[in-house]
Length: 155
Image 1: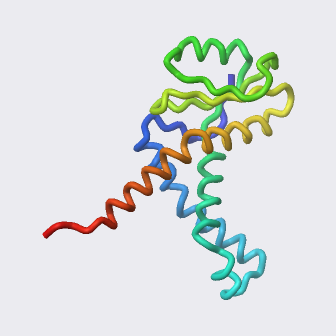
Image 2: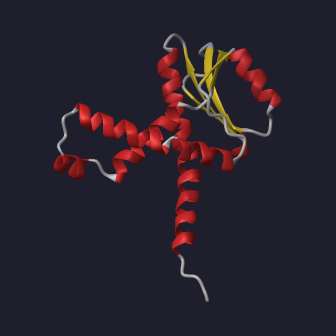
């Protein structure tokens, strides 16, 4: 079994910290990409929106998720050792190789099967894990925090 990626949060708070950590990198990536595309100031203001930076932040976070890659037997053994986890498996269950990402605070594991295209499977898995688990809990938590910060205070 091998592991690729560095983000493997044990708690929602840790996931939120990691998500926040990639925010400045997303801004730099967008700015440098716009510069390489020769955007002038006006085009930059028109085209580089908060949604663009947010999309890059989501992709950076997702592509950094720690993914285990192994045999069907290794995945089945992992599942047996983590019986409380809900398993979301994508792909053909008869394929010999599996990539998976566990989310302890959600007690879920997202997996995808593959035969030969490991890199494609890992990338697909990361997007699915982000979309199925992290997007909702992190962005909802961000919205709740922003709404609390915007709420009027009593004097």
